[in-house]
Image 1 (cartoon, rainbow, N blue to C red):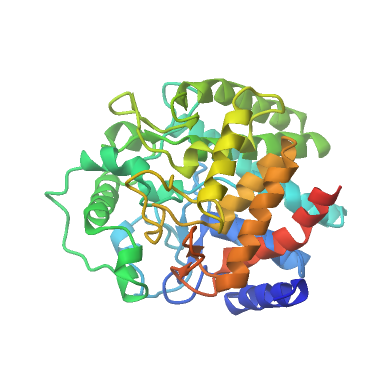
Image 2: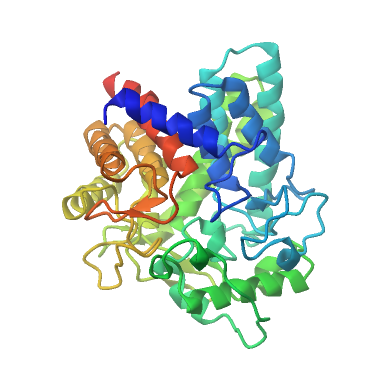
Length: 429
């Protein structure tokens, strides 16, 4: 498949999953608007419809909570094909949403949308409104998920990470009580192979956490301390730091000096705190179980995502780059989400091994910014190799390239457009 055909197919998929003001990740399996899916999808949309890209993000941010939290799903219309739906969450919002969040890529996306748009007064006004919302969201993270001002925020549910069933969460999930879980029926395994999805052990605990927070009426001033699951993820925190770095640059360019200073101050503290998550034996960052105070023995992709934020010349960059090169040696169809030589690796089960183009995108962006262009190009080519082998699927077996999860997947198509256009240009400059 040549470049023109890839771009045409990617645009077809974005159009197929377009609901007018928002996109769904794929019909059937994920029939609503997901937070970071939607933001990253806007990057692909902008390639052929700039206004539609801004609208995608505006639709998401219209459902920001009064306290600043941006939910991980917005239930725009009824659909009983997904569990847990709004009747389980019971968040009492004008438009039903979930009560947890997702990786905050919005700052990253806003900086790109602004840079690629006609910078007229109307676009400036749109950008300023969304930037203010992103800043409120970031403030919420540090207020509600870092109450002791450590500089790093905790996840209270695996779904917040975007890496739902990573080995990173297993120990912390094991401490979540499930004796009061209400009866439920999963819907995900009706759409895709159950052997590719999170296990029942995990799902019971996902639901138990939702019920725990629901019993507290989704009061974000209470959830952190009440949650039996508190994990500090270097990948999630790297995304938050990077998004703040983007906000700081964007705010400075738009004359919002106070916002820029606040965002940069958050970055400075968080980058210093990130070093507490370094595992020298692995040569990468790892998660912290905040409940036990122990670092987690799990070599996942989350520990490599700090390449997004480490400055040029940082002493840890060489080790992370070496790990990424080794991952591509072991698994040529994109960066594996878990270390293939670890006996817990599963190349077909969601976030326990498969490669995801959105993670590849984040790694590529960080590597380009830190001067590792050759490694970035290697990941681009591995990503496109997956597309050529298996089309725009949800994720891929990193060793065989087999298509896994949902098909005709929106953010995968958006990333294809990024790799074939903007990143191609960045790598050639």
